[in-house]
Amino acid sequence: MNAQGSGCVKGLLWFLGIWAGASTALFGLFQLRYEPEGARNAALAAGAFVTLFSGFFTRGFTQARTAMNSDRDVDSQSGIRTVTGLIVPTGHAKLLSPASGTDCAAYAYETFTHEEEGGRRTWFRGFAMVPSEIRGPSGTVRLLGMPFSDEFKELGDVEELTFTNQSRAFEKLKSYLETAAITRHELSLDAFKKAFHGMLDVLTDTDGTMRKDSAAPGSDPTLRNQTITERLVPVGAEVTVTGLYAAERGGLVNDPDWTSSRRLQLFLGNRKATASTLWKRAVGDFITGLILVSIVVGIAIAVLESERRREVNLKSRVPRTSGPKTSMFVSEGTGADTA
Image 1 (cartoon, rainbow, N blue to C red):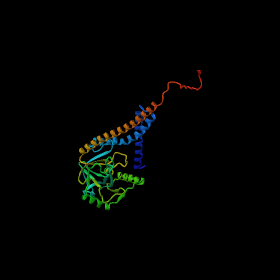
Image 2: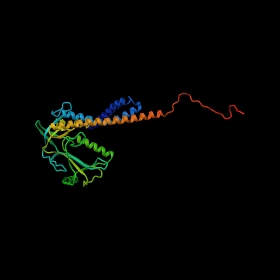
Image 3: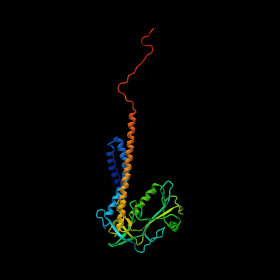
Image 4: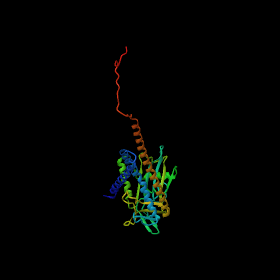
């Protein structure tokens, strides 16, 4: 089985294991006050949500561990290597960001509109990088994969630039999209599978050269009423990168097992600034996880309590009797007649 298939199996087993553990713990809690059948059903439902939200704790733990080891070149337990230095494309590679036109080693962009019901809808998105190396005090290390944030967002740990009016950035991006090989995403299971496998291909890339552009159904290439965001890594910027070190290639790569936490992450700045950012995110993730889990458990208890009270009210309406029922029959024309 290849790394991608192994990752799918591992992810499924991880979900089922956490779900079983969370459901068992919640059932033990709920059955102290409520009927076993209702407690079991509530525990299974709440356990599924708790399992989904457990990702916040896993991510928080990973970020905290990375922050604690940020002053080391290699974490012996996880195999994650941390490199700090100036990032420079190798050879004659050159890359310009599509909106701001900045000379960079990597970029990612999105265009979106704000929806009336809240949130935003993405229309165009893409990313690219060229083979680069990080030159630091301890030597030169190659960057051989696209860095991702913990939310699987390309260059998601880099500050975003936002363009909200018809500036030169819009004209630059429109010209870029006219010549880009854009993948059109359709709302279908097949399209979802292609997108998933495309993400796995990016995660397992090991040469540091890639470019992908995609568009949602009905996207308007004129970018009318759209907002542009762009994340980029300027040439010569000081960066701190964490990831799996491949000695045979002499560079940092993404772990081919997509369920692994050993993904490439890139931060602008030195190790001290990176550690501070990671600690803040770790605390935020732990707090978010606790809040979400508390809400789920609270809703489950509220539903169980409501059902318990309903059953109590139904029982209280049933007529109570203290003894056997007796009937009295009175027949007309019986008894003594008085003249």
